[in-house]
Amino acid sequence: MTVTRVSVPTETTAGDHTNAYLVGDPAVLVDPAEHTDGLDAAVADRDVGHAVDTHVHADHVGAVAGYAAETGATVWARRGREDRFEAATGLAPDRTFAEGDRVGDLTVLDTPGHAPDHVAFECDGGIVSGDLAVAAGSVAVAAPEGDVRAYLVALRRLIARDPSRLFPGHGPVIDDPRAVLDYLYFHRLDRERLVERAVHNGADSVDAVVDAAYDRELGALRDLAAATVRAHLDKLAVEERVRFDPESGRVGPA
Image 1 (tube, rainbow, N blue to C red):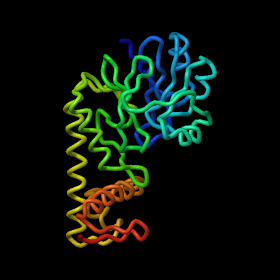
Image 2: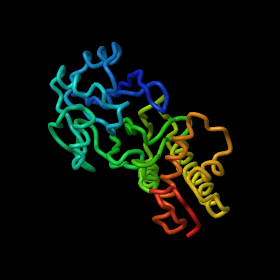
Image 3: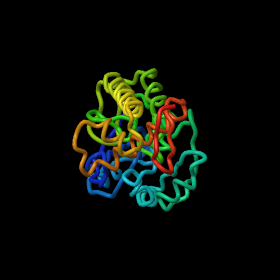
Image 4: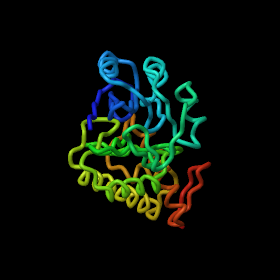
């Protein structure tokens, strides 16, 4: 099955490009972030029948409406998230999908965590994984949208499926999915241990946990680190391992 990746310049915390994909025949256009000459040429070279997004963060959806109008593609959104999709794209979906549904040659997999509406798409060549995984570094799972428990489940789902390749939302294609997915899973658990240890060692606020859990100067990334810590504290509080008041940011041992 033909999978065409086009790197599109965007403004994103994950880097400065987002990957758009054209998969199968007729092609499914996945995550068209912006109109570019390269993506225009790739779209013009294929019979595009469908347009979908792994999730509707701004760096993934900017050209959905434009390419749908140009190609006549059927526009799909996650069932139950139609309003969210329309707010992000300015376009009401033609159809909706849920876990296990087929969109062209792709099969939908629910993979929330990075975003509540996040999905991945499985094909013969691997899995188009959106912002579930990256080849190097880690994925943002940050409050208020990030859900660490859901993200860990999504990683385990992909590990169990043992795909041959991952086609991520940012960066190069991942040819060693198991190693990358294992790293991301245990990296998230390591961060969780640091957050929990910080609370039990006396950190009593989100800022104090950030200071204790990160061993480097964060600079412009401090707000993202604080949102990540909040997402971890949400999980730990649900599991009754810490106390956490999201309104005040106060934390303490359970």
